[in-house]
Image 1 (cartoon, rainbow, N blue to C red):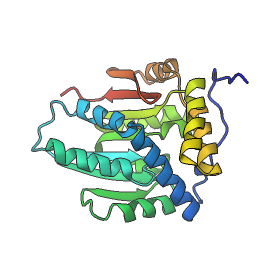
Image 2 (image 1 turned 60 degrees about the vertical axis):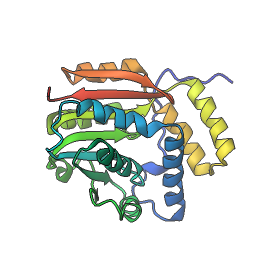
Image 3 (image 1 turned 90 degrees about the horizontal axis):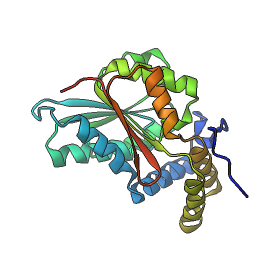
Image 4 (image 1 turned 180 degrees about the horizontal axis):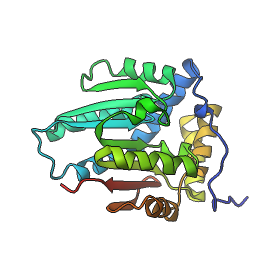
Length: 239
């Protein structure tokens, strides 16, 4: 049966309910992180950070906020990246679900550079934060186009150095391949259903270009990356 991916779906995911908690949620978060790592998805974000930090003095600490941190795997990956590359990084993981934040915190006990906070990105406490780099890894697709423009406008004004977006390319092939992954990894119905909806809520390149133009971004690049990702790097400070 043909799959129409012309437009983003507005169907909500299980994980969009911020009141969720319990073992099933923790398992879903861990499975998402494991598949993302297996497919090399974290590297898309790390490459983007490295690109922004090309001329950053290594003796100067860099503050990074990770929006929609999930189980914290991206935060921990950034901490390891900082150690390997010699950067002094301080990472704050943000999520609107308290159970998710506590789950991420428990998995990051041995990462002193990483901290977490329960926040809604559309409320004042998030808007008051200061940071050099903002990250969104598999988070942006959870929002409507209107909310994306609102959030990205805020990040473009607050992130002193830049923004790295790592999100899904909406395509029929990606959808079918994820169905195969669900079979191979024996994913739960929750993880399977949310993953397939995520792909249908992903993006075409023209949509990211349109966001960039509406936001009047001056310095950005959008690249396709394996596995069916777009890397959208926005530079707010030319260093």
